[in-house]
Image (cartoon, rainbow, N blue to C red; front, side):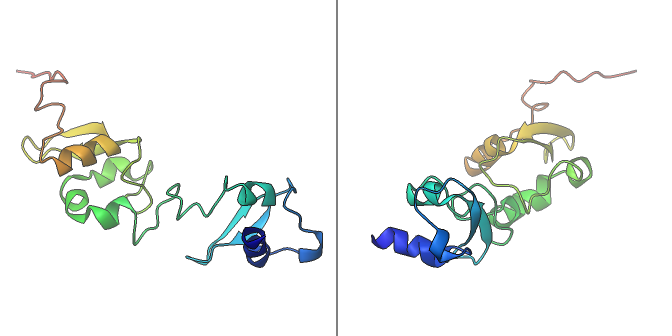
Length: 142
């Protein structure tokens, strides 16, 4: 079988003991990025596991990350002080459902909003600020 020969070639394991039905996890080397990841031969053969970078599960910092794809938005509206301990835009995907802190360019206040919805609003040229939209009540003190 052609596909299984490719699997055997990618595996970092003793080829004499490797079988397609094996459930034990072993190390594999991605042909595209050269990164090493762990999966079972069974999962690889049945196409259930692949390189996490090229399957879209983990962001590639220079190519598929939030910072690489939306540099202008991140530089202008990302609240680095509040997001420092929680997440880094270099390692987050634009489709992430994590909630991040943003700075509104209109009212200059910070608000929390999911990354994927903020990207969707950015592509549609909409303002996502929950304070400007009236979703969050702001208390004014005299």
